Length: 149
Image 1 (spheres, rainbow, N blue to C red):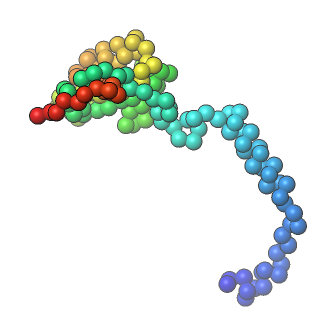
Image 2 (image 1 turned 180 degrees about the vertical axis):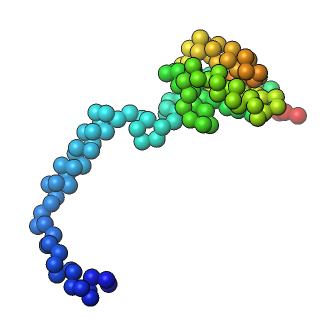
Image 3 (image 1 turned 90 degrees about the horizontal axis):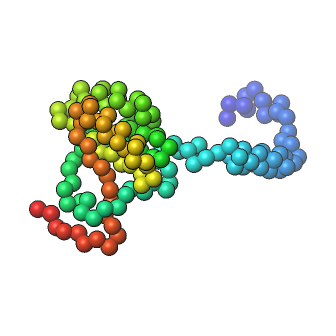
């Protein structure tokens, strides 16, 4: 080892006799900090764990492939591939995305808790930018799936 030629190991301070209490104090302070100031966005930002799509029968019958996708949660936060956007910034983002696509189709994954007024604003911003809009929804649990083509 590199410490042997210079005999550095003999010049090091000895380990403390007992540092168990300091370990538990640091662990307790970290737990209190994350308990008081933490949220479910602290460690991994993204969609919340209780994100639910609205349910409607027949949603899988006319499925199309979108060119762009956004996810909207109740707090009027819009998650795109580029990151978090506000509702006021959405028009500029859509206009920027329109430049590279021929006939763009926007898939909106709105949580079931999102207000209708927010969805209307998103739809009007997409239409003004020249996007077609698809609304994401899930099949009901007991729905009978028809076979496609």
